[in-house]
Length: 269
Image (spheres, rainbow, N blue to C red):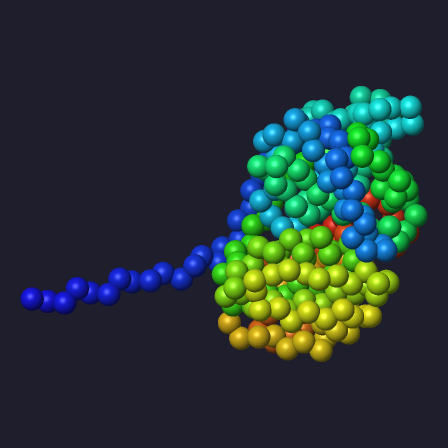
């Protein structure tokens, strides 16, 4: 009698998946505020309109919409010819990462950096439980498999919510190299992960990335932060022998001197 053949094992897929979501505006209320560190406040939002919310990628971004002066609830966008439009003056809106979404509890967390003056920073610094806010999106998600041999997570304080979310979802078999540049060292925090994590808080991100050696195996490079810093990080990463440009995402979450800036630097010089 022949012995049974061993079952074949298949390697996990490393294909990057892109998912589109229908644009939907929602009115939500602040139900909890938490001072995470001197420079960060976490706002927990909830409400019936959160039903059906989807955030499939750790670096998704939604639009946070503030009430205009005299409004209790902000104006939400309508979709016309595939583009969001507002009835009346355009409200203040900025991009934020859904730091945590708990569908069972009906809660969504966003984290706001309080370092720089601006309308969202001013609002978040004093936002009280019960206040209304609007969100729209995410319009799409990039789902990066957790099965890569290694992961690089690089960024400044604006990337912290996405990095924290990614580390929380990585399995124990994952290996992650994390470099984070902070304006204020007091904003360092514990980042929980089952993965094997090499975390360093650095003063100059491009220099810190230059000191890294590309590991063997299939990996993914993710970075986000200020535009000029991310352009420099991208040049440094691309100069490393063996890097795969198709397995990296480097984004500008903000730009000095500009408001509401968000840009994928895939094609940047």
